[in-house]
Image 1 (cartoon, rainbow, N blue to C red):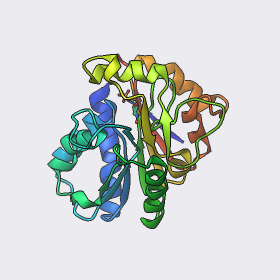
Image 2 (spheres, protein in one colour):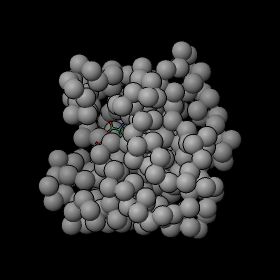
Image 3 (tube, rainbow, N blue to C red):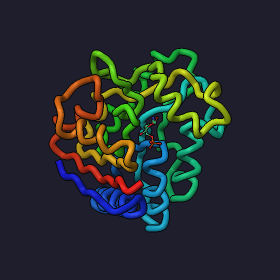
Image 4 (cartoon, protein in one colour):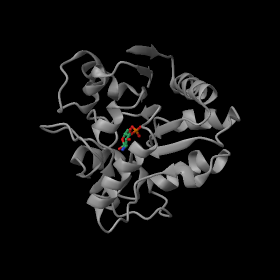
Length: 233
Ligand code: GLP
């Protein structure tokens, strides 16, 4: 595991973007696993500025709120279009985000896993980390969720994500999330963590016991993880 501690969010975003850019240059038809949330926003801005060639890239996103349409401004599909897909030369039909409106979520999850397998797995998985140590929407619990699944969000996650909505009551209570199997099977992982509030949790995740009560701790078992982090604010 490589840990790059930077001075601030800008530097974290730059260093993270360099890692993604290197992957795209080395393998122009890479499968990138992508994340939402505030952590990777600066990295997406950097990637746009770098004018990379996304024409042969495929992306699979970690998660989506269950119940939100792709056009809903709070959906993760909308987020990805806004922060990256609409700003680079990617082919939208090769960008995958779980369907938040799927009538049969179990079927949608199974198809999502099958798609990732058909694509040959994920070359580089970008991750953020929730305040409670979740990755994707894999919340702390008594076991590690394996495949893509419908998850009931932790109260602390609903409270943390309320800042993106008009009120906490508008935050969906469920989401579709890639499981830990797809994440841990990615050939490379890039974890972006910013903020004092996450410093202690990250420290436990990287140096404490590997436990489903702190899903990010599972990353200790992966052979190629880079963590880019800053805790200045
Ligand atoms: C969200 C997302 C995660 C994200 C995390 C951290 O709930 N589902 O994929 O990594 O929480 O979010 P942020 O970067 O805004 O702190």
